[in-house]
Length: 139
Image (cartoon, rainbow, N blue to C red; front, side, top):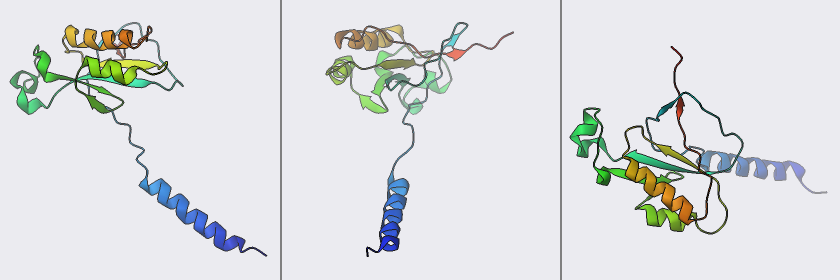
C-alpha cells in the first residue's frame, strides 16, 4: 500500500516552496497618468504594458521640482516592466505574433517619445493601441 501521507507531505512542501519563491509583484514603472473625461476600462485581457516614464529624478532638476521635462533623453521605455533601450528595440520585442498592448505614458511625457512607442507598435503590426488614463474628478 502506498504511503499517501508521506506523498502529501512532500507535495505540501513543494507547494510552499513555489508559493514563497515566486514573484507575484506587478512590475510597473511609476507614472502620473493623464486625466480623461471619457474613459473605458480594459479588463480580462493578457497584454503587454508599454510604459513611457521619466528616468531617475536626481538627474533632472526640472523633474525634481515637479516641472515638465522636455528632454527626450530623460524619458525611457519599458515593456512589461523590462527596460527597452529605444523604439526600434521595442518593435523587435513586439514582433512575432499578435500581441495586445496597453500604452501608459506620464502626463508630462514629450509627445515625440509617445509617438515613437506608437510607431513601434505599428511596425510590429499592432493596429489597436489603447492608451491608459485616469478618470478626471467630477466638479
